[in-house]
Amino acid sequence: MGNVRLLLQWFLGLAMVVIILGAFLWARPAASFVGQSSRIVFFHVPQAWVAFLAFLVAAIHSGLYLKHRRIENDEAAAGAARLGIVFCVLATVTGSIFAKVMWNSYWNWDPRETSIVLLLLVYGAYLGLRGAIEEPERKATLSAAYALAAFVTVPFLMFAVPRLYSSLHPDTVINARGKVEMSTDIRVVFFSSTAAFTALFFWLFSLDRKVSRIVREASLRHEQELAA
Amino acid sequence: MSAVSPVSRPGLFTSSLAVLQKDLRSEWRTRIAVSALLLFAFAVLILVGYAVGPANISKEDRPVVHSVLLWIVIFFSAMTGLSRVFVHEEESGTAAALRLSAPSAAVYLGKLLANLALLTLVLVFVVPLFLALMSFSVACWPLFLLILLLGSVGLAAASTFTAAIVSKAAAKGAMFPVLAIPLLLPPLVAAVAGTRIAATESEISAGLDILQLLLAYDGVVTTATFLLFDAVFRE
Image 1 (spheres, each protein chain N blue to C red):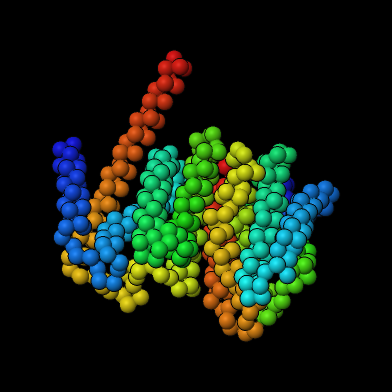
Image 2 (image 1 turned 60 degrees about the horizontal axis):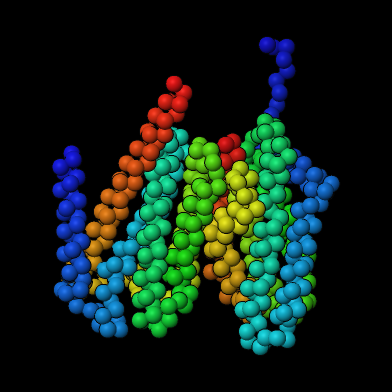
């Protein structure tokens, strides 16, 4: 088992190197973009995708916690949120740099910029709430309930508002015409990068869960030693 | 056993109304939430009216600026008073008694109605004053009133749920807006856009998309928070 993990980690590291080389050397810049700016799609979009995926994982574990009341699910939700906020910041910053190159302004409240800021606010509020409650079970229940409530409101800004207002943002991968419009080289690099970022997230996530388990077991042992 | 007469439990509707009645009565005795909300709203209205007023901005900018300011006044007034429904129960130690005497569904509906009543009072006070102070003219009254109604239902539902959470956390006063803003950003953005349309377009059909969005939000958030409330309240 350990060998397979190690092999997968090496494979992921190698894949990331190949993807970075492919993104800058092999894929040609897309025609309708300023200069080389279209290359950011290989990093920005997977980061934004992982930011949402992490929130989905946090919401699923929050729901599982409320159902089974297992503290592991709470730790998993918190871990996913901690990773999610990192990817969310990365997606915001890379998007902002792209906006400067493409539209000559770091920030112009495009609907998609607004929605990523909302996700950032949700992550911040969720982690802030966790910081404001001492007792572990109460922290787990209240933050799980909040994560689920936020989970149903986020889609309103994510999907509804960008459709109400016109957006400068390039079409999302699944666009209104329902098909992927990319040349083959861009498509290959883009989808492998998305897969690699997803794998990176789950690897970091499994490390986080391992750390949480060790911390929990250590504090339990500490309590037992104090009691003895 | 048979000597004990069966206690008939009141239905959900009856017990919700009982919770609402209790809240309104205790609010009437102190009037703390009402006076906090109204004084805050009044202070902000004066500030906004004095600094921005009707004359300081050009005619074409007015619908945008005024609709944003109106919702800022409503939103921040709500943030000063709507957390009291649960924070007060925890602070005065009556939350346990409430848990024993009513099912959590009834508590949630009762508190939601109490907050809606409070918010309606704020709207009745703020909106006419705002219209007068800013000489804000509404082109489509049905749309304007529907946006206010749907916006405040969403505001009340999300705030009531958030209030239940913060009443059990540390730094309640600071946490309430922090937790409420992410939940309330979508309806506020929509309500501001809808109010601007109501100020410029005379046909209600111009704001149909916004009304649909607000209605969907209200339905989804009220249902989700209603279902999640039990876990929060019994914690």
